[in-house]
Image (cartoon, rainbow, N blue to C red):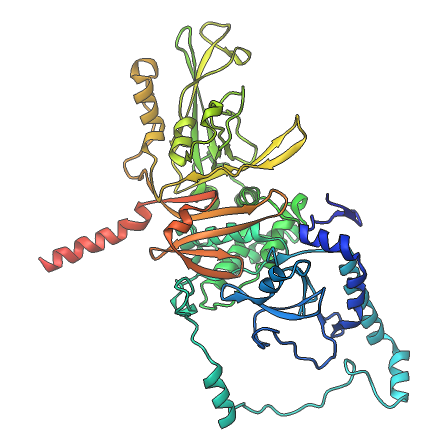
Length: 590
């Protein structure tokens, strides 16, 4: 259960931390207080037994690894450098009860078994107390005077002698050490590991800022969404120009937070050529200003973040332009221009054939893997956040073991269903409530289609939530033509029952109905302690983006992943230009 601290809800601890606390209490954390070193004023806390100590991994004796963790149980130091290796995880798995460690350079708790940061109230209180004592010591004049009278100052307050800068050049001994201990970035023993020079342009890891894997997974997909990437890299949204306009129009503090500006800054950083992991802290803070109810370091839902972020971009653009737009056209902002589509809902009176048609804009389509016992198959409501919610219709218990497919979910979505007697439709022609037939279809396809798989189920009767772990097959190429309004109504009912009005434009000739998969967001673990990872398709290769770590993977790994959100882009965005170029090359050769 979550607990409240100063009015805020603290995140759920991992099971290994709970087990450690049940066996040892908070005594090991309080014992670390003497080892916490803080550089004043307000510097970051670190773990050192001696101020001059240089921690090294107990297995490989390296001190330059990305992360070094000290086991809280035995004080042994081990490195954690995925995807190469993790001696800290090896130590935790080999000795039960040694899963909890502390980052020696950041003084942050880390679970070596879960490979994620964990949080403990007593440990945080210990670090804060050490920082408070250091700040008090550094600002207390009496303490400094007393140290001066004793003839010396504490090391962290001692003024350092300024020295001239001298360019370092290795001597013969240092050259020998470098040659003997250097290894190439590419590890031939593991084909999935690649050097930074072999990574596609713009592929860069994102640091986890504390349970922010939900944000990193969605951002990786958006950073490599072709129309969104082309928009920002062509300077269609200039953050400096946008900020000048905001300052001129309104000087309020909230008007300065622009998610599109932060996306522009992120695109500049990611495509700058720098391969070190990037920290999207500015974007996270701006998103918190937009979604204050989600502003915490708790794990959030990636789909909820996706919709909230697009709404934030849309709301800011709508306020600036102060102009009304037709829903679903995508003329208002880049978010709707890329992801916005239109759903068509037809409800037909089964007595006279009268049909009521409504259109609803949507940013994604949500599909339910689990059959709803005794409940109608599809939901006609559209959330206020413009997310199209689709539930698979009823299937018998014998079908629970069958493998679900994305195409099967779309077919069930566009299948006609008879509404129940308690959902009778008021027919304008009969002037009474009649039994009706309802059918959903897609009137307008977006440039990028996002399919959200509803893997988190909430039961109001049982008052509990659970995760749906059913496997879903999804194709790399998807033809959306069978699910368009024009195709569905013509094949299912014919023009006799559903006459098309002259203004219906479901499938324009210039819009492709064929889509290609380019990103998959997956969720692993339980409902309350899971982890999000994104698989990206770039240069015809698949890459796994796990926060700060990037690895190349095979297609089979992607297909076996537990898909949560799938992003498909229209094929014409990939191949239209290349086909023209290929045709011109053929003409030249002839």
